Amino acid sequence: MDYITSPGHIDGPEGRRKVGLRPGGPVKVITDLAVLGFHGRTLRMSLLSVHPNVSVEDVVKNTGFDLIIPKKAPVSPAPTIKEQEIIRTIADATGVYTGWTR
Image (cartoon, rainbow, N blue to C red):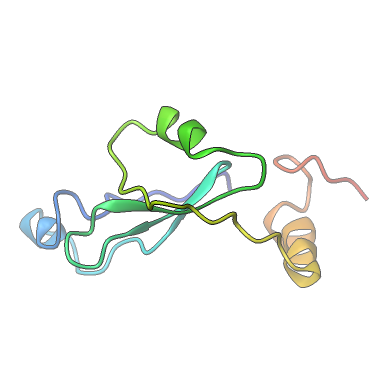
């Protein structure tokens, strides 16, 4: 699986209901560059953290819409040993995405 997609929040807090979708929707979006979330009241997408060696400018340049950008974006934490093992054995067991091989 490369990604799972959803219509998201469409145009705000009532967007999903207006188009006949169940409530809820995505909570976070994790990309190759950053972790994105959603603003509490407006549900506009916001930058939560950038991955190591990625700049905020890189994220903005590769996003097709306006993000809420914090004054100082934190760097995403590295995955724990347990998380790395899950990535290597379950999420990307064949190494297609990560290039990992045993």
